[in-house]
Length: 259
Ligand SMILES: [Zn+2]
Image (cartoon, rainbow, N blue to C red; front, top):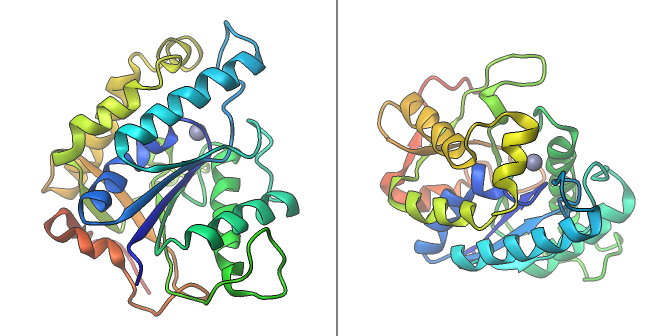
């Protein structure tokens, strides 16, 4: 197995809220890491126009990826245009064939926002076709190597129909919390925007509160990120679970119901 991990999120700063701790720990465990937001985040401002917002957020995301020591991949569409459609699947699967990640970190399949759900679907299909020779992308098909997809938790820890979601796996992010904070702070333009538009009283506090909440669900960790490992069919051998490479930072949720 090649130790390569890739975070695929919808908007600039989603990785920092949901995945950056795990990505940083994978880096520390010897993985080459990759960072990609599908969207430019162009509507994430009330003071700048869409074009200017795109430029500002691109710089912020690149800075964050650099802080995390991850390879940066530029966005491929705009906000509210993350659709489950041919061109985006092709673009993303070309990138996956090139990078060949053994670990893909992405959004929850059900979440409060369609952009997140579509990102999850795009990442899943883009990985699924990695070894299909007649599916054309910029890069030729690769072998059907083992690839594990981990879905992060939905915003608010609930699905859109308000059912609670519990993680299958807890990752202790305490040792990289300071780095996660720094990476989030790189998204300077977002701190006031979220306060104005979504009443997140503090951008930073929101991320910390989320990781503390997941940490307390684990009954072990102060700060944690939560994951659900996708069914292996089409992706890997049944027990392929490379987040276990994180050793003591990895904890299975014993109450998670599995078939
Ligand atoms: Zn988002």
